[in-house]
Image 1 (tube, helix red, strand yellow):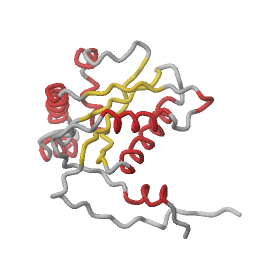
Image 2 (image 1 turned 180 degrees about the vertical axis):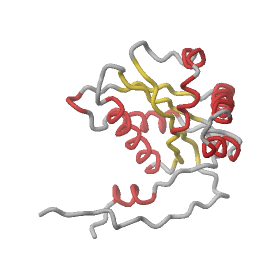
Image 3 (image 1 turned 90 degrees about the vertical axis):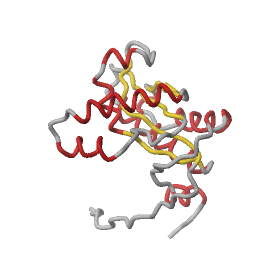
Amino acid sequence: MKDNEVLRIIKSRRSIRSYRTEQISQDELDTILEAGIFAATGVNMQPWYFTIIQKKEVIDDISEKARDVMKKSPDARVVDMANRSDHLFYHAPTVIIVSGKSDDYLALTDCSAAIQNMLVAAESLNIGSTWVGSISYFLTLEAEVKKLNIPAGYKPFYAVCFGYKNPAVQVSVPPRNRNVFDYIR
């Protein structure tokens, strides 16, 4: 199998759920955001918008409010998730809310591609990251979402956490299911 730096980084990236408290540098953040805006995008629409949150009080508030909504869910798995974690963003110092143009039918796909680029870029800089889908519970709180200053015409989809990895926590490499290919030749 071929191997190069990009493939090694893709294979080594894992969701990190323990971060050091210090903030990532502006240069590192700019590099991650640049990778995001160079993602694949249908018809070059670039329908994304990034809200970068580095204020601890705001990150903590979003986490608490999302967990409160999750605890009221009729889905026991969601309630369990809310109770298992003390923080939706694992105390990461940087959280980016990724939003897409509401009228672009490919916005979710394009924003997901941007997130993947940012995750891989962060790993290349030895910065930990986690894609947080459970932010969707916070996003049901319209009055709270307005405080994020997301422009009109954009819908927030996901959050992504970034921070320096806590070296005391080791992340295992789970095996990959290879029984997912079917060739039609």
